Image (cartoon, rainbow, N blue to C red; front, side):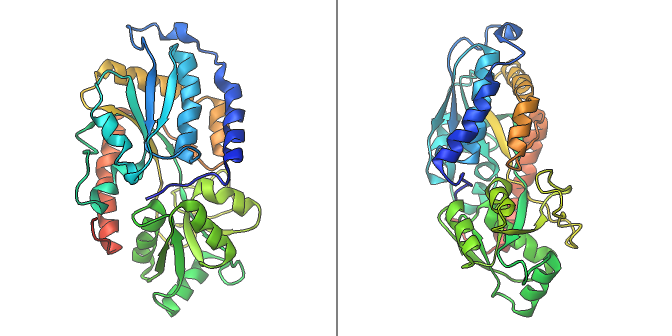
Length: 333
């Protein structure tokens, strides 16, 4: 299971460089003189490679949190195994606030259904701190004339069940699960074409080898803006600020079709509530106007939450994704 990457490392570094200008903050470390935490370096484990959108959010936040909390934050990329290398390191770490993780939703939700056994328990082994952002999904196609809108794609899918192809970044990924959701809501049958990564999937959609993709917003935005892909509908309750002319799926005639690849900040289980609350407040403050605007350019929506709201979100999405995985016919690995 892979996650969206920026089209090049150079693009990623430009994005991060632009954010670096915001590390001089109006609130300094003096504002964080509550208790003794933190007194040393904080390690932020990201169970994905450098260069993806999760890594980008982690690095941008780390710069701001280091400035506001007065201690270094270091991003440690431990990629592989769909989160099964990085997340256990956090689950087994001391619950002292010095080892944290920023995780994509799928590692905490979908993994429970696509793997027979995980080396971590998404609910029991972690203390939720806050949801960070939402990455809405958007249905995109290459052929604007053949599929000018969602209704045209639904009609084509119904006319030839199981032949209209859609790409994803791998089985069980958010891009894949968009398919079964769409099929259920529209009474259609599509043909899933999994790829080893979001970049390969979207490149073949651009090339016309695959007809459609339920893309994560950051991976679709540059190609839609360049005219290489045509966006049919956003899978969220409201329109995206970065694609204001693209209807929601509800507006396009498909009700209750909302799917977002969110990210969250978590600590090991049994982390003291005082530390959790301190981190929650620090993250909320770190999402200043500049960072919100920069993330918004990629279609990433800032969406901080309380720890309890994140806990409820994880539990509800575990159930939802279990239904989607079953509908997709996936056999646990």
